[in-house]
Amino acid sequence: MRLTLTVVDPFGGDFADVVLDADPESTVRDIAVELGRQVGRGGAQIIPIGQGPHSPAGNAPTIYVDGYAVDPGATVVTSPLREGAVVSLHDPAGCLPGEP
Image 1 (cartoon, rainbow, N blue to C red):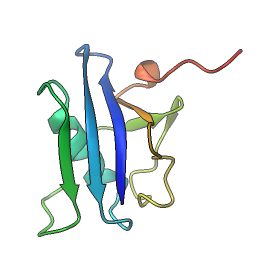
Image 2: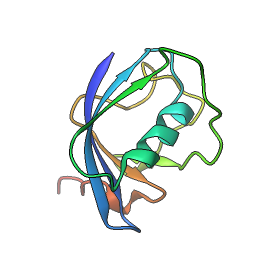
Image 3: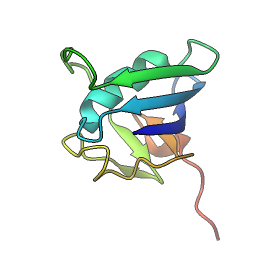
């Protein structure tokens, strides 16, 4: 499953446009670890997840979509991660404001 996401770190002021290439059954926790690594690196990144040996998912940041925390145990398919989503790390402040 391939998704283009914008990842924002509202505390560090960094953001990154990433292409997430993940197994549909990958967990949000695994994805959060990789997204946290990509912010601040500059340029678009392609992140392969779930296609090789699993790395430990320690220190996974909480991720937010549409202002709501995403369950770290959810899979890509059952999560709100969709094409073009803005993902905020650690705090919902990086999410786009809702429509009035």
